[in-house]
Length: 204
Image (cartoon, rainbow, N blue to C red; front, side, top):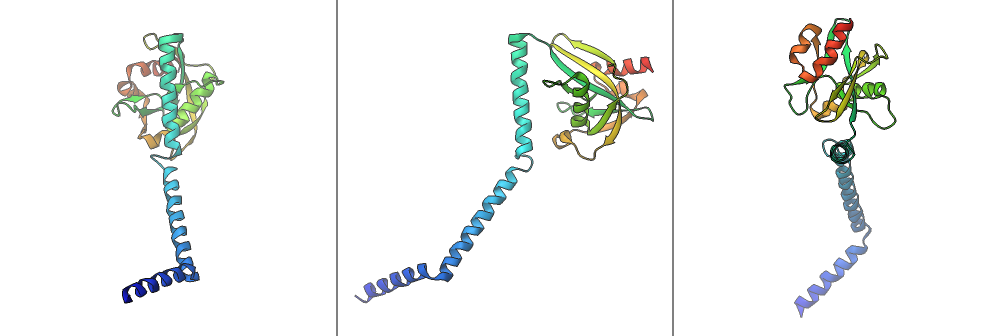
């Protein structure tokens, strides 16, 4: 009987504790702590590498792969690309490393988006990939080069830097940029990217 009475008393204390303002305050503190932890988890999801910018890039890559397969297998229409050969006042060429092969150097270039001209796309791609805001040296392109096997047409423009940014979109993906003396650039470039450099030197 004494044990039963003790249990009832304990139950009564628990019930009284539930209605105690101090006890409710503890519950509120716990709720706020849980809410803050949830907020931190959401904040982490918006950071790299698994945040919104990362997801946007993954979606963009997935979409482009789908478009590529449709273009190659169904529509058979060539892909339009544009890029910029950036040369400074000291006759240095700005190159970036390839994401697939980090030891290879390329001229920044990418896909022409819907509604863009090739010149607009070239300026955008150079900023995204190399982190420099540029202007065209000449509205006339250096040339238009066709890869018949991959059904790709790439237009290159000569550019000059207006702003060189400390951070940029592709830097987060491990992209590296480097200024090369123009006389050494051809030796480090992929074969396809030597053609706009050769066109620039021929016109100089």
